[in-house]
Image (cartoon, rainbow, N blue to C red):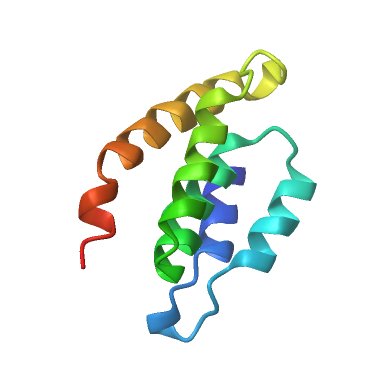
Length: 98
């Protein structure tokens, strides 16, 4: 539920009058340390909206490099985040197509 609410609040699309959510994602990182899904959603939302492939790839590589055992209570979420990060990295060419 925490991840869903955070995604809904932080992922307001510019198309719908929202900003790119960067400030909301920064706050989510403070409130939920170790929640890698926040970074995945940041990459998929904010970095893609900004058309910043370097930020997208750097963020997702950070998720893949993270020690998922550091936050035992978030282990399942963080394993899911790693899988999503790998899937999004594999789709980068499609997400950043000209």
